[in-house]
Length: 331
Image (cartoon, rainbow, N blue to C red; front, side, top):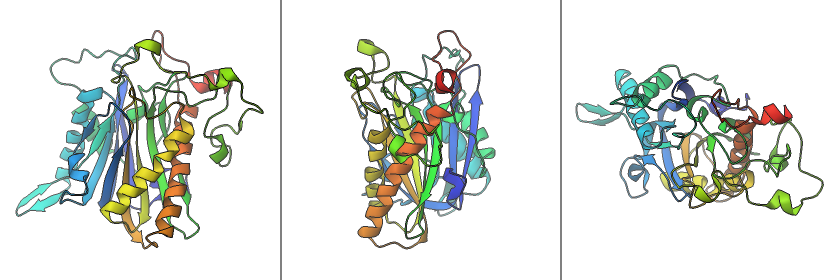
């Protein structure tokens, strides 16, 4: 176990970034189509192919999922991932046609100081293609891919991942790009809200403060009273090797969203666009009630850990007015 999304067999991850733009894309590639669903909790989401993931829609499996910066421009990243998959002969077959199925979600990083004057077309389609082309089982965390330009209320945001195994031997892992309107840390200290779920000091081992003051519990939000619903969003993917139906994958995403609440304060706000996908490679059968409940419980913990790791591993952008990274202050 590498404590990464790719601990689930048949999953690969790739990043591509544009340092000048201060943004990037992350591609999650499934070696075989995976059953998938989506759960949206934030008030300002940006998604691609979300209607296809509705439980009433016909297509059950996806070939990849694209996470990107760039706000609505970043939705082009899914087209780049789709182009790479088409070259590999992947996709949903309609007679002689193959259509790669690539849902996606975006976060807002257009005001982070990067040069967004890219001309007629944004770079995200090319970034999506490059991310898919380099996808593998090893990948970096922090200020990479979709997390390159991410920020939070207090520290530089980033991309995190974590994994775990249920008592029944089912694997579940998460990847999250953290661009939250709220804070992932407690007050002005080094403590992560997700500390109770930390494993092996994966984000510093600081635990929680001995006592909580009123100041620690004070709401800290990015942008203060001028915060916009288009300036934030935490987006992620849960993957398991359990055998799940599409409705069960939806339930998994819903339960796993608890991890957002365990790691971000506040969360699911009108000024967020929080989105979580759930995907199943369907290798190991589980009991449909108790088994799915346990899987969701572990998944929520994994999501919380992934969020904290994204902040812990991030590096500050070398741009005027850039937020400090957690390690700049506590590393």
